[in-house]
Amino acid sequence: MQRNFQEYDIQTIFDTKQDHYQLLYVGWRGNKRDFGCVLHLDIKDGKIWIQHDGTEVGIANQLVEMGVPKQDIILAFHEPDVRQFTGFGMDETEFALH
Image (cartoon, rainbow, N blue to C red; front, side):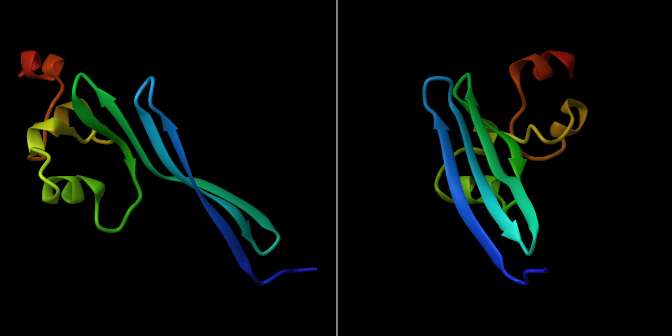
């Protein structure tokens, strides 16, 4: 029997000891189990590393609006060679390469 409803829970996972933060959705779409990561952020060496951003607005833009300097935000979902062109920060090891 096919169910035609969607039922989702939004879950947050905060690992404050290792500075990993995720926003997930889990639930059902009809008869199919659905699960995914909406947002994954890490804090490394005082910088915010955006590992995954599935938001419409973009968490990097929201962080800048909240006063976080662009150089303190790393768009980790871009390959290292491309990050220098994003207008956001780079890892210190990447500075040495360019």
